[in-house]
View 1 (cartoon, one colour):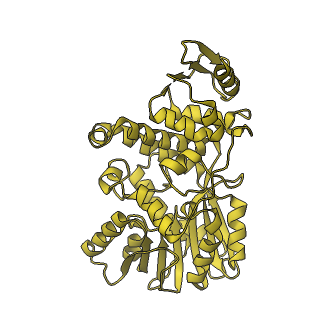
View 2 (cartoon, one colour):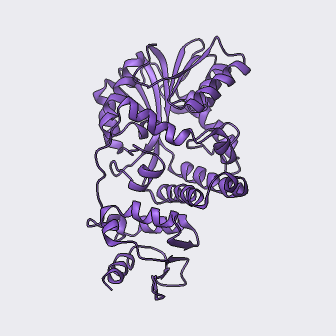
View 3 (cartoon, rainbow, N blue to C red):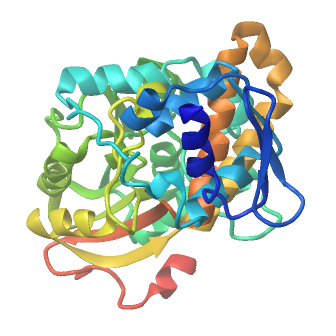
Length: 390
């Protein structure tokens, strides 16, 4: 009875859309005005103590295990929870901070490999052919995901105003598309760093296949340990979200240390305009050690490390569409994925992709590109943005 009262109070004002809730005892309630758009069915009660400890973990695990069933769009449901000012997401009695996370080099390598070394075959099913696992850039509404990812790569490189023959470092190079495009199409000497063995071997193979041994190098190494430098340009896409709150200052200082005087860096990553945050479920099951920094937090670290902002661009809507496309691709290949995984894994990844799309859609998180320079802002760059689009 106490559990039921707690749930009713928690859920009654948690959504901005009408929702139907089927409780474990056969009782049903409809919250909000109008025909319910989503139905939530609790096959059993999630213990209150688990919700109080960490609501995102408790509810995420219950969905993964099939103890909660959702009929309708998960993305729409999560978005509506973020949009409701009285949602359990914002209930101070339910919000809990995670224990301090370790981001030693050993832990960072373990964290990265636990996610990215699931196997290239898995990611190849739902990413685009370039194997780019970050926010795409949709210049036109009819751009395919592959085109939008190539748009993003060129958009980033063009912001640097690259001059042939100069050196570029890509911190967290992924499967190598950005660094190899910079070598082939912009005539730069490039180096990439990754902690994923799968990505490292993949990029090595691409370098040999494309005859770029003289211009491109990849290292299986922690970003803090590279012995090369300085570099004229640095790119880093989707990287700082993995270093941990306590290491953000070190990350930006490392970027500064690797840059030559008046060097330029384009740092692209998920950022919260409202301030930094953890998500317990995502940290536990998807990105161990993840932390989404706040915008002002990043800006202060950039300034403290001796760099200055030349330009910033938000890509929130682009990331929403990217995630929606990934989730569609994921569903399109469920027959293949289900042959190698189980239902719990499938529900986990579907929840991850849709919940993240909802978080971007609601403005709970954003994706921001920071164009920064070592020294006075953009001293070596053109005075207006027009050069980026030429």
